Image (tube, rainbow, N blue to C red; front, side):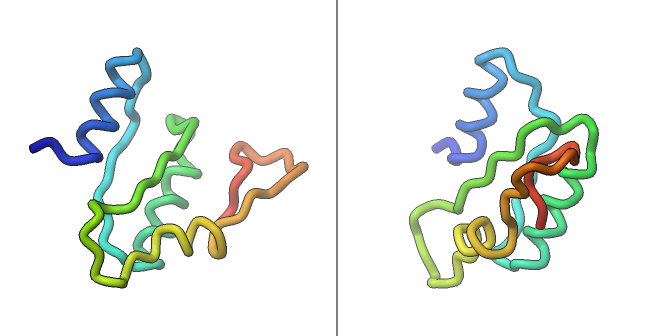
Length: 85
């Protein structure tokens, strides 16, 4: 069985996009935030796509909460990325 992340990577590259990086990070707000920040700082990364793990839940899934509360869209800035964490 192919993982959701592998399927996403295959579809992106199959559509002609360059996949600059891919990472699996545990449900830890600081680890996720640090990974996203490193991609924001990387000039080779134009888009960041996150997704939560497979539907099996331990009740610890912090990905959606991080996207909505810890990382916010910075409107009207001149930064390379429209998002800040």
